[in-house]
Image (cartoon, rainbow, N blue to C red):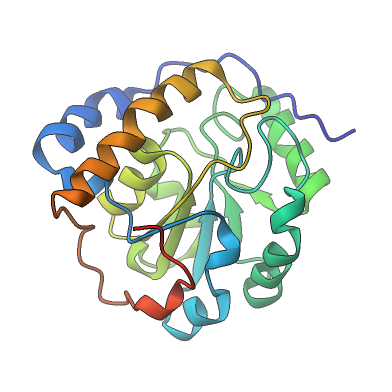
Length: 218
């Protein structure tokens, strides 16, 4: 009932391949989130709104749901309702599969929207590219938006690259996780932690306030 079809094969992610060396070797701060949390329950949506953030962009798998499942993960369901109460339709899912050219007739995006009641962004460029589709959707500046995601070199680099507030979420579950994604995660997470230990910080953000986060991992 809740199974998603977006285990579809994904086309080449040009932006990720081109931008990876820049974030890995030159601008490491792009790979550092403003907050790193166990899950979205550690973020206060009312504080985000109070500090002027006008929209929220969420990755789907292992940020809101288990991989390839169209149901908000049980442990964060109540918390996400708080985000929906605060932001209503100013929430969008940005996936690197559903809503892209890989998603034939946007069938997977439509299924997610039907099951979750959350808009799925239609976009041609994959994270860490694609800001034009986001700003067209929200009609505001990237610095007024928040990016939530579990992946460092796509979700977090994407948000930081364009000046969004970035929030990294830990893995919700290993069950059903894409093997390639799991392998990349085992590479990128230790790197992020190492750089934070070395004193690397996220790009400065005018609307950063520590009380947005109830419990930061780092």
